[in-house]
Image (cartoon, rainbow, N blue to C red; front, side, top):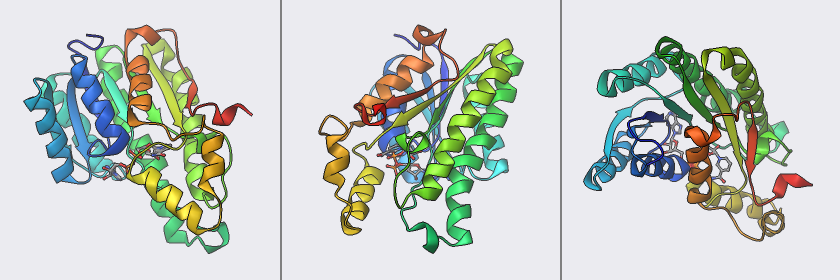
Length: 252
Ligand SMILES: NC(=O)c1ccc[n+]([C@@H]2O[C@H](COP(=O)([O-])OP(=O)(O)OC[C@H]3O[C@@H](n4cnc5c(N)ncnc54)[C@H](O)[C@@H]3O)[C@@H](O)[C@H]2O)c1
């Protein structure tokens, strides 16, 4: 068990990548708080973990609101006594030509993907400083490293996540808090499927993207395994990285 007795909070864990990370962490012995905006899916994931013999609780919250960020960190500490691992996974996509983006479009994706990640990190790190350390894992994207058409606002948020990660890694290194980012390319989730459909509809063959990724989409387990590595002591000397999980898509 690589996370025995650790306490983990995973945001946006009612579906997709976050769900797989929550389940993987629980199998490795962590007590897991499953957050999502959608209480039904968050509860289902937490119940599934508990039924399988793991330890989990759920908390409904919208990470883009500071009061909710405070709430989920407090819920984690009140329920399990600490916050050792924070996975900032909650995110939304926005696929539109840049010249058609409204101010509201821009704000909506910024608020969740970048501001929300900052807010939960801020309150999470306050707890980690008080308890003497922790590991923060931020879900960026290949879109945080390279550009993609129709994804300008999404790419801007994910690039912002990489820079927030590096800055916080340096800032909190003396306090034993590690901060790393994962940069997946296309992963088999509802979001990944919507992305492929929108690209195909816009006449940009998703097939070409897949060829740059070893000919397939990634699986949620491809990402959860890397999150487990970054959460565990196996990565104790890894800090401030933006790690592609992309079948080589960002390599050239
Ligand atoms: N699937 C991909 O191809 C892919 C690739 C690169 C990066 N990512 C990133 O991985 C993360 C997870 O993506 P996914 O594919 O699992 O998406 P998904 O849409 O399948 O699941 C995302 C979950 O986050 C929740 N969520 C959305 N906004 C929230 C908010 N404000 N507060 C709390 N929860 C919220 C949703 O309810 C949903 O359950 C996202 O940050 C995404 O940008 C995904």
